[in-house]
Length: 135
Image (cartoon, rainbow, N blue to C red; front, side, top):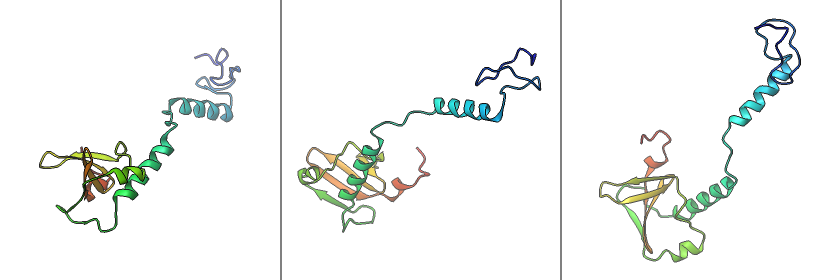
């Protein structure tokens, strides 16, 4: 590369110095890399704060006092209309799994729920809150 015909990749000024120069100074190099990194980042969805708020509210509603923190013990809701009226939104959860009986559970961290029309089962599943769970 001929440094006499080389231009700064950021501002376009002619480069003077080493033949492998890409930028005229540290400021141009930093600006170029900052802009490049920002362009490569995936845009955060505008609803992300609202989604986190819904998941937090869901967790508060189903992690009720008295929830058995033992395997194979569940709380049953025969009518979830009251839970829905308080703001529970079953579309938002942190993970999903199928138990040994073929029942699909959605969990919000360590508390899982199985929903069938107006009936809901709630149970404690500590492994669902582990960050190293293999899929």
